[in-house]
Image 1: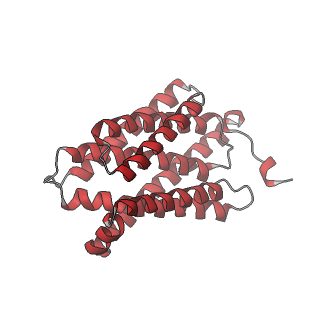
Image 2: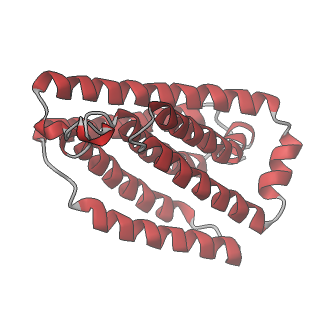
Image 3: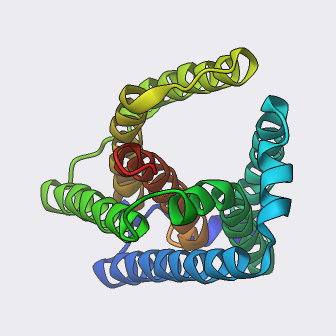
Amino acid sequence: MPYELTYGPAAAAEPAERAAFIRRTYGHLAGAILAFIGLEALLLRVVPAQLIEQTFFGSRYSWLLVLLAFMGASWVAQMWARSRTSSAMQYLGLGLYVVAEAVIFLPLLYIAQYYCRSPNVIPTAGILTLAVFGGLTVTVFVTRKDFSFLGPILSVGSLIALGLIVVAIFVGFDLGTLFAAAMVVLMSGYVLYYTSNVLHHYRTDQHVAAALALFAAIATLFWYILQIVMSGNRR
């Protein structure tokens, strides 16, 4: 029997199988978050400040190249994570995405660590991110609501946001705190969307892909919450 036909959607699975799928998904999500934290701490320790500044801040187009590379790596990672024929490929996809996130986060965390007055900027943003994610997750699990209807809305919002980011890079202006706040709202929508997909739409063998989707939403949510927290703490 083909691999893709041996598993059904979590919503139609037996309670024990569905519960096991959810545990695997959030276990892999926790592992991805811990791997991201460890890798980021290592990069901040071993990568010279001069290299970070030259790579990410050398010109206004440096960041555009980094963003394009990240988007390419993200596309490959998500394709691998959805593989129906190889669990090893799924884990490679998740690992690649964690590494890509760690690299693209490096300049922002570098600024937060060395150019903000408070040493608690990063922990504060992390706690706020987990609080928002936890609250939204509980909402989905308690209500059991299917938020898949948000998909088209979130896609349009993401395209608009990407367009604004690209324009800002070319024109050379800061999108500011209001944009960051709008992105927090957008990413909160993605958390609702992906969490409801875990309950209703992912197959019970797609725990790696589900964990990657949730990790992507959490990481981007953290990115913009960190920017908001940093906005009042610059030296």
